[in-house]
Image (tube, rainbow, N blue to C red; front, top):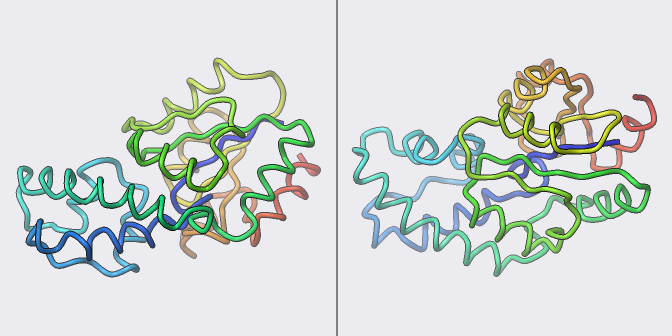
Length: 207
């Protein structure tokens, strides 16, 4: 089967590193560091939309400067955390999927450097046939992967409405990462909700 994964909030608990980065750069940005909960809720937004959601009163120039400073610190924090950046059981789940012959892909709205740092720190970079990142349109990313990918069944695994919408736009099944950042109100958007990474194997068998 062909499986397209979101990254932040689905495979990785990236908000931990991002919260630390905000705290480490408060004196440089002049912005009060948001807490883990606020960062987690904003995850899944693209580019400056992420910073705008956290700092609604800051102009675009200020947001761009904050992004420049925080993004670099975030990548350092991700590398310091290492494999712990992944949700428990995710690494084993991905390796087993690969061993069983499934084709794995990434479609993330996160920037290229951010995605590379997270996949590298988690030790899972080499498990994916294609990694799409940095774009504002997840449905287009999914369409690009499917167009250049293998034949057979497909599913998108994510934690946000944007992931379910990207799957629907391409006529694909969507499974929700209930072990990640999936909100209660969004569970209905997904055909199945995974309570743990291991639950994906039952979904794969049932398709």
